[in-house]
View (tube, rainbow, N blue to C red):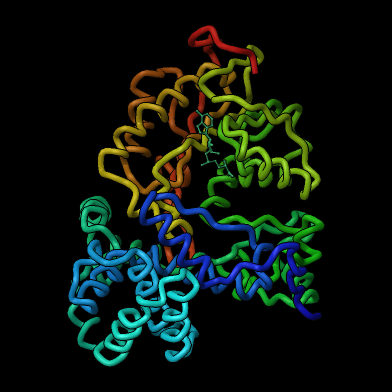
Length: 442
Ligand SMILES: C[S@@+](CC[C@H](N)C(=O)[O-])C[C@H]1O[C@@H](n2cnc3c(N)ncnc32)[C@H](O)[C@@H]1O
């Protein structure tokens, strides 16, 4: 079957290289990275080109900036931002594996200067990229490890300190891989059934350790299988966290930090029959849409409430509470490369305060004998085991339920996979539900 093309959008389709330049410059100036909708591009191929150019430019920001300075013989901050952006995007396209012919990489980067109405800057972009084409071996050989890997030095050294040098390098390399599109199949289909269904719709899949991913996902989100809710996109680390919750899912369930709803949908798909009531909290209204869309597409139901976890109380209590708290997200650097440039070491300690506040508040709504699952997509001990240790120190009615022979689940990023942390906290039977402070009912 032929893969679907995007319909022509009402207004002119976005030019992928020009849009990548605009969004790169906005990110460099304001630190905010926003991707337009796929449907704003003419085809899924041009969306793919845009996304790849922008992600690679962000991923190796320090390397491209360093090379731009060398190639222009000027510090990057003294150059026009458009020149910096066009050279960075040109270098991305001239790098091995970009899939772009070198002549096109240079011509298209130079042409961007016309599109931003700065034709007088064409010469410097052209000369810099031609110089890179000529001298790239020596230039690349001269990069130190942080420039070669594309990470701030402090992240590599803290990961080295916590996980060992070799593991830290593997994690950094994993974060440099564009993330794979991993699928959680509808339970009635299972991995084999979904794989066969997708093959019939023109999408080859690969199985790894019992999980499924799509090597060429272009057009997947317009496929019938997606639209009719036959799968959910979920990284193996997130799948593992949701699987940890499955045995404890019964009665009343609260997903306290729910959007976009991956773990909630996973749970509902597999355990809906065992559940009496499911409440999903999410304070950010803009994120409700994704949550509601996922629930609707998969035909699942939950009561979605706009609230901060620490601001509401339900006196009936819950048998299972998921606390997938906001965090630094350093386990998602493959998908969100900007994370490694925007975080500061102090953030991890600062985040603890809110994480502990949420967790302790939720403790008060966990039924005696119930389960509270604390999880993050952070690789930083301050946000993970340190929060759990501080919680246990103060909440004597809770104890850790081991996962296998470990006190918690820690998935470190591997090729094409993100990272996550989770701990299962069980409340003793012989305790009483008590609201920690007077707060709004959910
Ligand atoms: C890691 S994401 C949750 C991912 C989700 N569990 C999933 O599997 O798709 C954390 C979510 O918590 C929300 N959040 C932020 N502050 C919160 C708070 N105080 N209480 C509850 N949720 C909060 C964020 O807006 C974000 O949507």
